[in-house]
Image (tube, rainbow, N blue to C red; front, side, top):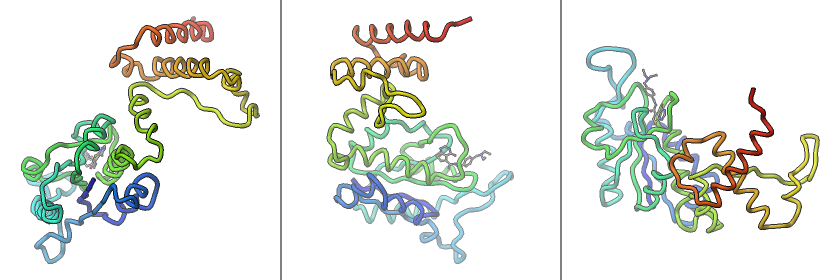
Length: 251
Ligand code: 9D3
């Protein structure tokens, strides 16, 4: 998998090479990452890549030509074209389905904007999709790009040590995780639920699934609307809801 990123802050973006799952993927040669600065591909002697918006208004707009020239250099280096994904607050929300789709291909180009935005002509001509990290205002596309690289890297076969993990994650994507506990069995914040200390693996699995479904019902009902529960899961959730109604009496 080859990922190229266009950014005014290439050193920052490449920091992720030094850590965690992305670092591991690079060392294993299952992933390669390159960052390209559009200032290196402008004909302007002052290396300018932005200008004032036509029609007026605050802020600056990234010019199309330096981005297009950078993209051309990337395609030359790759020897082929690759999907171009623009990081944008106007984009489609990036999620695990997007991560899976990207991990299934051989790579892509991430374009990180800065300033108020990017000249629409670059977007229209070159962007295959626009992706957002969610409804918050950031100062550029670099952090969303790093987020995407991390999410995709952990789906590349062999990058996660444990083959189970990625598959479990994709189920965990549909509903929330159950709570976790580790030693000690009791501390100033309370005791670990008895069942987890019982050694009864079947009951523990059932308890965890019930907690996962219950938390999803409490915190992310939208996720439950999107999936079909089987009869066993439906029964576990009904149990959770009944116990919850007892614990928290409504006025
Ligand atoms: C505050 C300025 N905004 C309206 C006047 C427009 C705006 C322009 C540029 C808002 C943010 C940005 C920079 N953000 C990104 O490039 C970005 C982003 C984000 O801000 N939130 C979530 N996902 C993304 S992906 C790229």
